[in-house]
Image 1: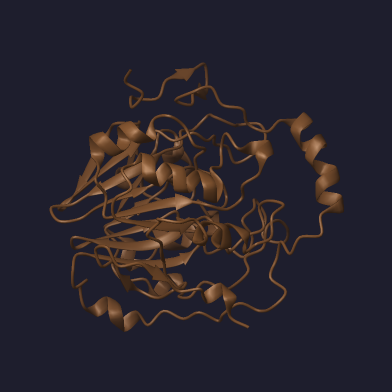
Image 2: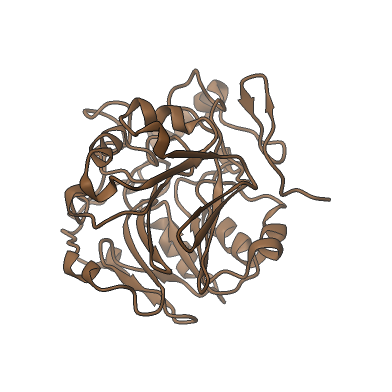
Length: 334
C-alpha cells in the first residue's frame, strides 16, 4: 500500500496521511487539572547560555559538505553541498501571536538575524508560531542576506509569508511529493502527521510537511512536527538512506501522541527510516510547550541504547562527520 502520496483537501481542510486525533476543547479541559497541579521543572531554574555564534566560521565552506548551526527548538541553519538553508526561523521572545505573553524562550538566539550569512533557501514545515515567527519573517525578508533566497513552504503557507513582506515571486508552495531544486539541492516535501493553524479557527487550512534535502554528496531528513505513523519505513526506503535525521522529541504527552512523537517515538521513527546515519533531536530546550520537565526529552532519548545521537550546542556551527556521535550535554551545565 502506497502511503507516501500527495495530501488531499476536503473542503478547506487538508488531511493527515492516516486518521489522526488533534486535541479539542474537551481534551484541554481534561488536561487543565494536570497543568494546575503540575510541579515539574518546565522552565529552567538557572540561566541558560549565553550562547554565541562565531560568524567568521561561515566565511569558509563546510569541510565535508554538511554543517549545521542549531539556533534552538526547530530553527537551524543547514549548509549542505554548498547550499545554505534556514529552517523554521523563530527569533521571537515568545512563540505566540503576541510578544508579551505565551511560551517564552529559555535563552536568546545565539546570533542576530542581521548577522546571518547569505541564505539560499528559507524552509518552513508548517505555520505554527514556534516554527514561523511573524517578526522574524518581516525582518528577514528585508535583509540583503535573504534578498535572493527561495522561500519554500507547504501549500497555503505562502499567503502567510506574503502578508509578512515576502515577495510572492520568491515563494514556492509544495504539496507532499513535490520538489523544488535550488542549485545542487533537491528539496522534497513529504507527509507528516500533524496539523496547522495560526488561530483556533483556521486549523488544517494550510498544509504541514516533513522534507528530504538531497544533494550530490549529502542527504538529510527533516521531520518537522509529526506523530509516529506507518509511513516512515516507506519514506526511508524511497528517499534514504540519510546522513542526518532531524526528529522532534519535545512537547510530547499521551494526550496528543498522534501529533508529537516524543523521544521514544523518535527512536522508533529513526529505526523505521532505516536507522542509518545520525539522529539529531530537535523541538526541545527552548519553549515550554508541554507538561514534562524541560530537560526530559533529551535525557530520555540519550538513555536509549543503539542510537547514534548528534546533538550540538546551540549556536555552534558544527560539521556532521559520518558515523561520529556528538552529545554536547550543554543543558547539564551548572
